[in-house]
Image 1 (spheres, rainbow, N blue to C red):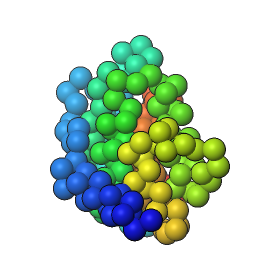
Image 2 (tube, rainbow, N blue to C red; image 1 turned 180 degrees about the vertical axis):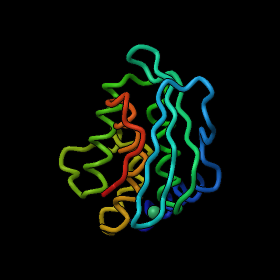
Image 3 (cartoon, rainbow, N blue to C red; image 1 turned 90 degrees about the vertical axis):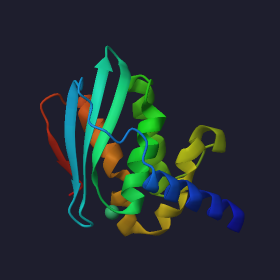
Length: 150
Ligand code: ZN
């Protein structure tokens, strides 16, 4: 479906050029750095948790277009969601980029679907999933401050 691929390309280009929630959070309750040494992608994810809810999220840093667009889409996806919902999105995204799409509906995927092409490029999977791994670490582990894809 070439048209769909074009749309996905547009979403990635747009989020790379104008990343959403691209800022440091002054009220962050969690702050975790994510690093992908294979590509050089390096981001810091900030979370403001209010009980079980991700009240606010921000990220800073730099890397390739896929990694930045993915961090941006991740931030818009989980903002205002609960920890449990964010974990589910993590699983969905991980299955998408590793090509395990059995039972995933387009509705469920939403904008995440833009990254479906990544599964064809194994080296890019780490770029696309870096921000998500960083998010999960930030949600699960209060003490951990750095996560790498290795
Ligand atoms: Zn990258």
